[in-house]
Image (cartoon, rainbow, N blue to C red):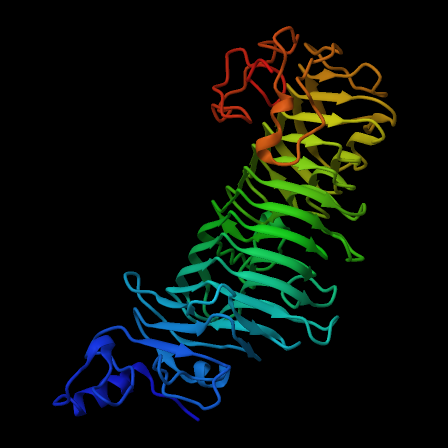
Length: 518
């Protein structure tokens, strides 16, 4: 059954202009939720209702087929009843405006969210060639027929031009049991993607905030998978067509039990990923995955993120600045208990990674590798004022360099501390392009490189090794007698603050903390 477009609703209203309009936009005695001419309309969906309705709250739609047949306009709302479940694929129609987005959300008094269950289909929610749209307060799952290719939420533009104004907030996306495929044809919890090759297309003004993603194979959250991504930094030999997503913020999301990658930002400009918590990634995939990483971006910023519980050595590290990145910054992040390590520089083949900065982060008990290098060109990278703590029972290669490709990484003002059982060492090539200076490196770490201005003295951290969140890392502050205080080398454009928010001194203190005292 077809349901009226917003334009048709207004036509009906004009024909019924003589009728009395009652409270709440209802026609007197009719119960149909029809707004006044030009006004935004509210539509309601209750998939537990026994009969299909008109979309009024008193006569709701009762299926995703009905809800998907509606074409919405600026300011319209489509609301699913809390505590109910709709099964299948929801593919809404229509766009809002910059001042009046379409809002897809929930209504009712139940404490349980409204559920969209994809039932093993290609995707549970599919936003296609729409803009100025807000998706909020829903629960999304897609668990049936596990191991087949699928997504929870797909936001797709195909030969559209620039799509503007996307907000995904307060969503619970879970049990999306897809296959182990990644990329444009892969399985994801939330995926923003650009397809088509005729009209240059991208996203602008995207906010993905305050969502919970759990039990997902393979990738949890990816933005954007684009056919408009070719440029020299990515070793693309075709005609350059790089068209990044702009004004992108991915923040305050909580991820857990992720089969592969956690958060991936791809083909963006000045995107920000901050205040995200990832607990458990790469827990089922048989291929390479990291916690939070960026690919083919300009000016990417990752800050105040908390990543732990990465499994395996492919890749298994918390953070990654990948191929095609230019001027990425990773700062004020926490990494702990990741089996693959802390950080990855991963251009590969003829890709280029240029100008990545890794500063004022804390790595606690990450094993296998502290910093790993893929076989590609890295230029102008700086790794400074980080604290890498390797506790009892943990073994780590602090820097693993196993490539002859061009590499320019300056590593200074870092605390690298090994305590208790286990081993720590450096594995550098004979012609290493890493430059070390002013680092505090435990004397029992083997194969340590020359470190002008550095020291092997105990940095006297207050109570290191006990962080379980960004806020509980105070044990990495320094005791007043620490030799690391004000002995670092000054770094221009250092961000102005340490991990804890203290102003950076001149000369700076070595490590992630300028904060003194326990």
